[in-house]
Image (cartoon, rainbow, N blue to C red; front, side, top):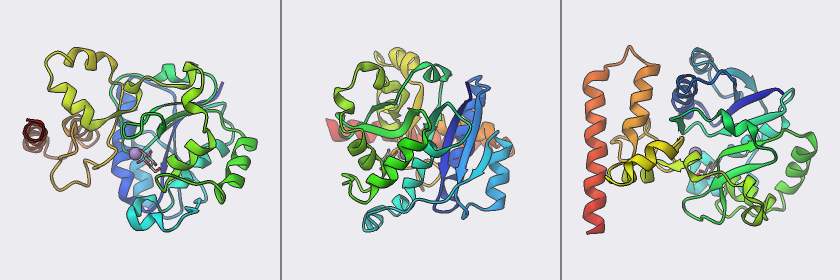
Length: 269
Ligand code: GLC
Ligand code: MN
């Protein structure tokens, strides 16, 4: 069986740092399964070299334009985000675990490849929809062709691939449980941070949190790291870039995570 972890890079180099750190986290999880980065032509040569250092095989793919261009006005990053669908079009692979570049692997997740059919975890914002940042799938020319055909006529509730895919797999919520990943396989970073500060939840989290997803703010883009759970990401970043000034910067990010807790407590009190 040919298996691969796959990530997608489009809309320029903005998410390359995320993919570097994700690649590093997969290596540190002890996985030796292939890693493939699907990149569009606008990903620079320098970025491709950085990806290769973290074990990504770079494959260039043609972008898939957003069928609702107006949604880019809300989130510029949704521009070519439908390019993710190219995972169904990848050649020579039997099973794919598709990970957003803004995810971080905390524990080995190779068991995901033992599932059959399509699987994804609930979305934090609308739990009866799945989040498209972590998906297990079987590449299929036929499925890909059906998706491309459905694109123009399918509504996307969030203006991105996630809204479209939830229309395509509209019965996901009612599917048998094998299609539903435990939430720890796609855990919002801010939930992780919150639970990590809770003395009773900490142990559960250490067991169950496997993939963090920096859904809202991206640690490498935020001016201050109020993303929640940023310390875990920066720790992996410094593993990927040992030449950077880990000592003091690491402390700054830890303080910022602590600030997030305090702010959240203030709001909730
Ligand atoms: C959400 C998902 C992300 C997806 C985007 C666009 O942010 O977390 O995976 O690409 O929506 O639909
Ligand atoms: Mn994401």
